[in-house]
Image 1 (cartoon, helix red, strand yellow):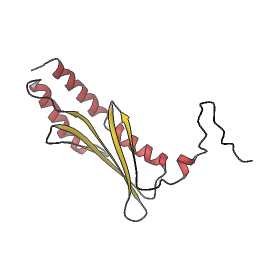
Image 2: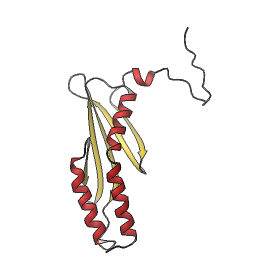
Image 3: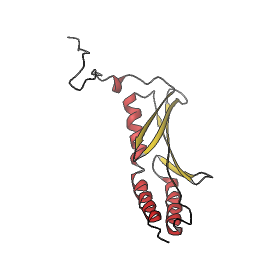
Image 4: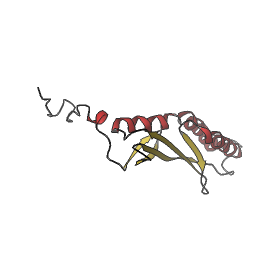
Length: 145
């Protein structure tokens, strides 16, 4: 018996597993927010039949010394420690913006569900870093020398 495509109680049409089974048309890009940060994601065709997901976002800025020397020093230490996160790398731009970039390779053309899962893995790895950065921002706002 064919499945109906009428809207569900939530008002959306059921997907019937399409997100988990139909390969994503490449290249593809999307944006999403997590931890009060906007992230850009791009999926491109890689060598062979694989694909590469790249997620990028600006997760903060280094405070000025006038705001807090201690918070600035701690924020630089966080950036240095974040250069070797699993699935992601944190770097500092010349404008003192803290940028994260993560990649994940797929052996075959991914489905939308596997891309969403990959983006989640990259961003979840940032949670401890984001928490430490939030503490540093509070320190700078409270003007801890």
